[in-house]
Length: 195
Image 1 (tube, rainbow, N blue to C red):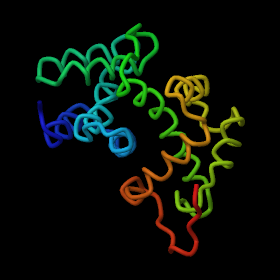
Image 2 (image 1 turned 60 degrees about the vertical axis):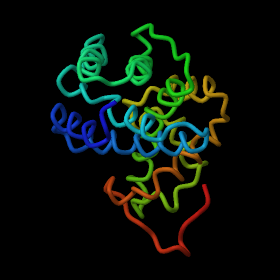
Image 3 (image 1 turned 180 degrees about the vertical axis):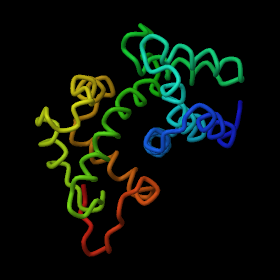
């Protein structure tokens, strides 16, 4: 299987947008955290998160994304487990999310981006003081982060078998260590909240 360095090089080969690269890094971090939680291979899960949208900039329209990307991944020797999870993160592909890897990727993709958006509009621009209740409140505000499909957020939590609050808290905690890499601020420890 290609290594993480290979996956990052592939991401950068296909993606110029800094925001899309940050999204890929965020989803990678969350996927690695979930792999540790479930006793799975963090490298495999992290690569799935890192590459889930690598083809989006070149092929933004369904069904090209993620179908074209899946072809590239197969050509470059990525395991079918990763390819199928990436295909399953788009409902319109019809690829079932029949593995834990696929279910987690689907559950965290939209929500990870949404949580970062919530942090960016806070005065602190930080995940360190972002409460779960604030994220849930923003989910109800359809004018906020309009591009995030709320139905996917709720369906993802349901398919994973997690309460939405628990999923949000887990993602916030998983993103905190890389917050600065994502363009977010780090607060002094006395100002941090528990999600």
